Image 1 (cartoon, rainbow, N blue to C red):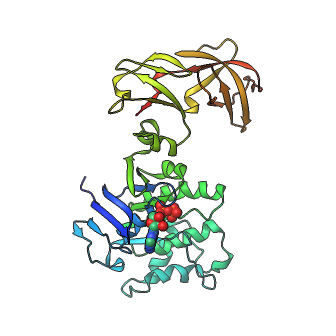
Image 2 (cartoon, rainbow, N blue to C red; image 1 turned 30 degrees about the horizontal axis):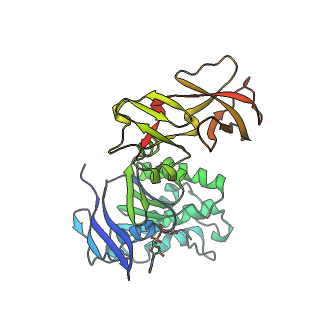
Image 3 (cartoon, rainbow, N blue to C red; image 1 turned 135 degrees about the horizontal axis):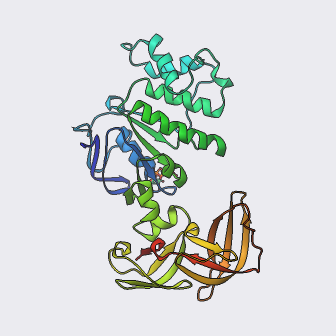
Length: 351
Ligand code: ATP
């Protein structure tokens, strides 16, 4: 597929500060693409260079075959939804949405506004006062206002961060559905890895102005390319390891066979294993692969899940284990002796 957006060798300096370092990426038409990373890593700066709110110091930004150098934001086929979504409280919902059309007298607001509202699930809300809306509804109004111009690319800077957890989770699913429905390219900035994993076709994980890894959610989770990415995406037990072509000897877990596709480039010295890839073996249960003995050090009950810390011989820090709670299976207590099952196929070997 021919990419819609391409960044080649993009660098951005603020004075001496090197905010974007040699960014190379392409984004496809209709893709839900996320920029994910810790605060200050350059996500917003990268989004703003695509939007045209920032010039690049070096490199090329192309959108739809056109070099964007010198093209101002309002002439780019992009539109931005900001974190503080700037709804005018004294206006109606329809007036807020129509604000998106202020520079476009050619578009008929009588049809465009209801169309945009229907798109975001607010059909019939046009006459309502904006100040009376919930946070989630305001967010939808902001989306409708951005979508009414039918941009090729919608840029979203932490659009859900002002919402509470429940509303945020609901809006994640709605945004994803909306993006599929309208079919335009979404580029989302977020520091919330769960949000990025849930919504995106592909994610660029950024650290200190660089892209650490660019992949789909499952690859990032199962095959992080570095310890930095692995630490940022989900939870992980990191254990010192000695690795050769066929076996890994992992501190605390023991020696087990591995397959060539598990080997990273270069020498592996650390094995990562996700909490859900370890299991507590209850009476009578046997591991399908390997098992070790341990003692329960901490128990955190979450209703659907229980998180255990289990001490095993050979490592200082306890293993973090996530167990789904099922009927008939007890919740262990601190001090209980237990056995831990693990499968070498779930080892993530890192340099
Ligand atoms: P956050 O999630 O906190 O918004 P971010 O990953 O979006 O972080 P950016 O806002 O892109 O990070 O900022 C990246 C770095 O560039 C930061 O160290 C920031 O202080 C710096 N920076 C951003 N804008 C400017 C500016 N206009 N002038 C100088 N430095 C800036």
